[in-house]
Image 1 (spheres, rainbow, N blue to C red):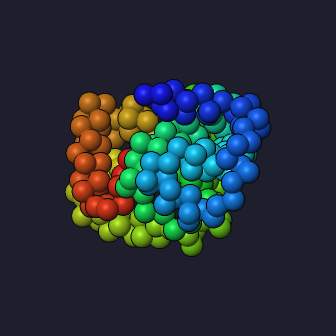
Image 2 (cartoon, rainbow, N blue to C red):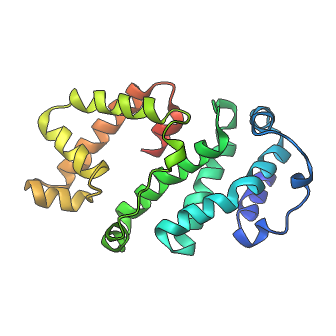
Amino acid sequence: MVFTIFLLYLYDYRFANTVTMSSKLIYTDEQLVVLLKEGEEFAFTAIYERYVDVLYRYAWNILQNETECKDAIQEVFVWLWTRRSQLNVTALKYYLLAAVKYKLIRAIQNSKRRDQILARHIDLICPDALEAIEIKELKAIIEQFTQTLPPRAREIFHLSRNEYFTNREIASKLQISEKTVENQMTITLRKLRDALGNLSFWACLL
């Protein structure tokens, strides 16, 4: 509980520039991940200090809203700590960038500024991350999975996750009830999480 409170306080972006303790400790990303999995709080702090600026700049370039950027990054870091024992990371920087990217997609989908953000034609994929970690495997699994869906379920999933339609917009486009869309997505995402298997991190972001 104490560290959870500390974690939420640590997230204050203005505080990032004042924390110096763990930044003085020299560890590789790989060492920090191992220590984090063992529950070492300073490892989490060091990771936060090392990458919060990069993540914030990436989020800001897309959302250009301080609150939304901080919320997305906070969710990623909270997840990083709460699921630390299950981490399977080979490229920490790109892992975190990809995680923030998926959070931003969800934020855009629910944002009143969605059309404005998408109109800027910003590429949400981190170029250097395309060859990193589990991205390729993730895409392949999702592509194979969608091919197994019934036509209507596949269309709903595509509109939601690729076109960023809201449930209401999907219902209007397909002339079905919003509740039907919601139920269909619930079923589809449950099946997709099962299909992702050990890629549990990405399942949490869907």
